[in-house]
Amino acid sequence: MKKSDWKALLRFLGILLMAEGGLMALCLIPALHFADGTAIPMAASAAFTLAVGTLLWLRHSRNRQIEDKRMSYILVVTFWLALSFFATLPFLATGSISSFSAAWFEAVSGVTSCGATVVPHVRLLPASVLLWRSMTQWFGGFGIVLLVLALSPRLGINKYALYTAEASGADNSGHASVRTVVTVRRTLAVYLVLTLAFILLLWISGMHIWDAVNLTFTNISSGGFSVNSDSIASVTHAQQYILAGAMFLSGVNFTLLYLFFTLKWRQIGHKLDQFRFYIILCIASIAFVATALHWHSGLAWSDAIRNGTVQTVSALTTTGSVVADYTLWWTPVTFLLLMLAICGGMAGSTSGGIKAMRMLILLRNARGIMRNRLHPNAVSPVRLNGKPVSSHIRGNVMVIFMVFGFSLMLGVMGLMLCSVNPTEAIGASVGCLTGYGPGLDASGGFGSYAHFSAPAQWLCTLLMILGRLECMTVIVLFLPRFWHK
Image 1 (tube, rainbow, N blue to C red):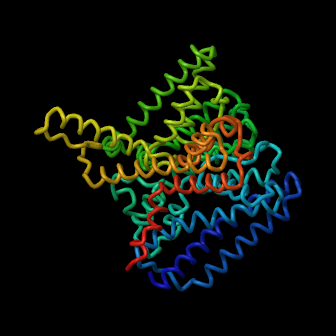
Image 2 (cartoon, rainbow, N blue to C red; image 1 turned 90 degrees about the vertical axis):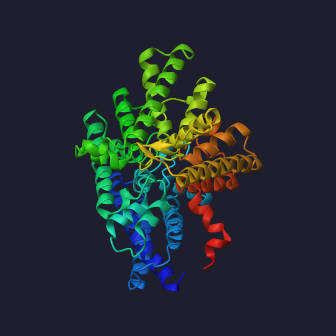
Image 3 (cartoon, helix red, strand yellow; image 1 turned 90 degrees about the horizontal axis):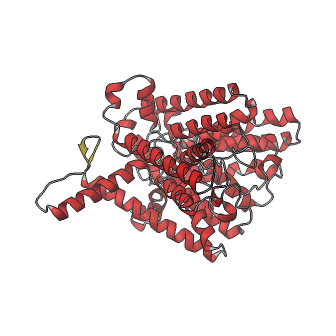
């Protein structure tokens, strides 16, 4: 890797920091409107971020080309770490969060759209900080690298390598979705349209525009932060269903949404395998949870269906919004919600987890292996959308699944070494690695991670970053061969 590659990386980082500083500046609007005393520290945070970004951009403005494709991995990890670091400034400057470890936890959770929080009483935070928390999830939800691809056509780096290095926003079934920047801009346009549409729907339903903006930002990005300490439990039933709709759409492949909105039915017909699996899994899980809440917990059918729908969709899309304290529900229901979070939504969506496409490939691969046991001479290829899935892709899916499971086990062990009880360690590891957010016991339901020690919080942030970049992007940087010519 050449020196010019590193300088170009700093230039691109400068562009993103300027964008982040601009978003911080927007938080001055509620600071001045509510006169909560955070205008000066928020302005200082925005000015500092803008200054650093501008300096990096001007200092390396001549370095526009990145030649080494390995830089795509370094670029992505650097972006997430740097933007998370600067995202801590509003928390620390306003005094909303006193320790750096807690501020780092909140910032990483926001930028990775995880939804775990160390703030037990969210409603007590200043309005500007609440908006900043929501903004971190909104601009982090669909992938910062995707935003760079849309706004900077001349990156000088292989666009597919950069797109898939971020991974959580990529449909790994093929290169077609990232052949042109036009496609990226279209998916971003869908993201913006959905954001505006759900803000309008919530406002029409009677929600205050302030809450509507914040909750739309966090739910359309599969984030889960809220402006209320009880997440979305205190909003009306109709608004809970609207937010469930936002979560559901956030878990759908955005390229598929674009084809649907533009009525390109012929192209949609060849991309429905993953969507069918996503729909069936969602409906079956809702039916099980609603029935369990009615028969086991004694809820009326209307409440059981509402709670089951909202909480199941929240888990499957790894949004993390909470409509009721699910840790008090029947244990099999709680276990199912964690399993849904591990599965996640569709590839090419804002959700986390392993992704429905990979789970579908794993299941069909297992079915093929069992068929070969019964009929050794039969040829039964694994198919997705009518096309055979190559052995290379099946191998990659298996590796990602194993690395994910290994990371989860190490996370549980590490948290237990930090004196976290086993049940909560499992819930926190799943919540942070999948991007779901809430875990079990005190960190689940309406709880928070405020009681975790500093080492435990740092470990959780590592799991968030690993999960957001789907483990492989980070792990590959520690391979000696990666740094060899």
